[in-house]
Length: 95
Image (cartoon, rainbow, N blue to C red):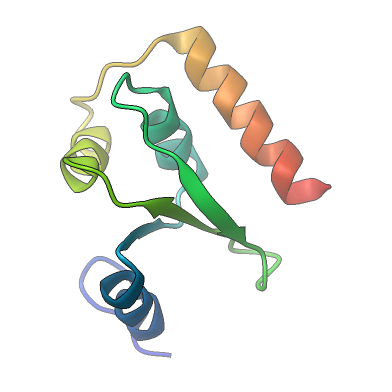
């Protein structure tokens, strides 16, 4: 399994390019993306590896920029919305 500089596996990168999706492994970043007013939506959660879920988002304008802002600690979201989305993602993973 080969990964690029961002930690993305080659098959994930290929899927992203073919389907027009944005893939992220970090549950907190996924929750933050769901919490911004831009209205990003999850296409599916890949739970094939029980230790590392993959969150697949529909591509929408600036989603990569928002993820980048999250990792640079420059993304502002409402705390309650973030917590609710995090709880929802965990429920979807563990059901």
